[in-house]
Image 1 (tube, rainbow, N blue to C red):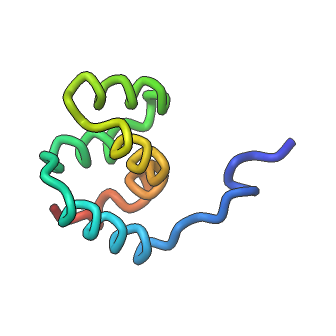
Image 2: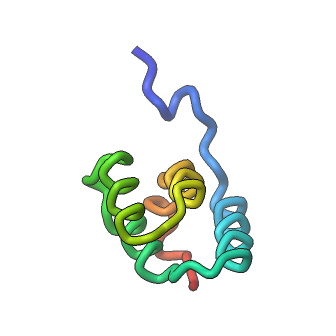
Image 3: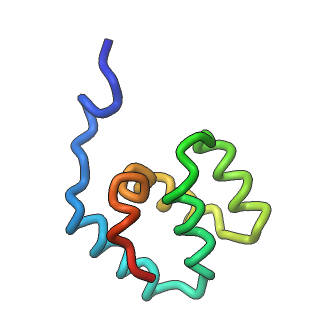
Length: 82
């Protein structure tokens, strides 16, 4: 059985942090609560997080992009500066 990690290359910490910095700079979202949620919530499913963010006004396209980088938030949370 293949697991996700074996078929999807992991994003480097540097690439993740650059992506996040560019994403934050290009948006008017309130990033502190969004990033805090993604860094600290390892138990919710992507679907649950999608619903949570959507109910709190985050655009669907932004949520999809954030969830595509969810592993980076969990792995590099201590390195994130907003």
